[in-house]
Image 1 (tube, rainbow, N blue to C red):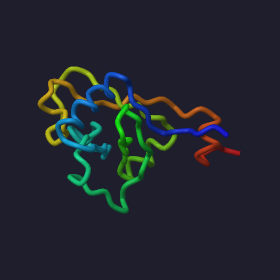
Image 2: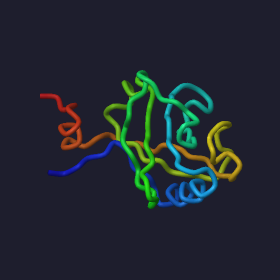
Image 3: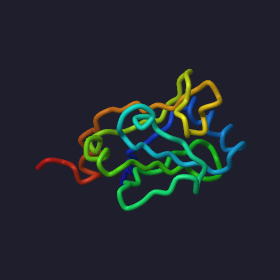
Image 4: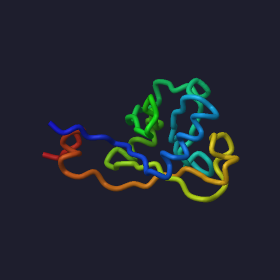
Length: 128
């Protein structure tokens, strides 16, 4: 049986996450949706952003650390994105105001693709 994931990370983003973990400790992501900074994946030290019943756990990414990094999305945003696979990447630019990469001169962003038929089936989204 194949394990499917809704989230992944590029090596460039994983490298930055390893550096940020040394500075801030364990990290997590939240993708809230909305405008401005809210449309970017926000990276927080674990415990600094509290998830609730209105959040969906998308999965965890392996950035080459002792612990994986959990990724969440607001439930309302998930309704729009549930048919997509998300990859966290990083590009030069000013990071979001509250996200830990802000001072680094880099910013996280989401790259997405539509889920493939086998993934749709694994996530219970196949039409049939």
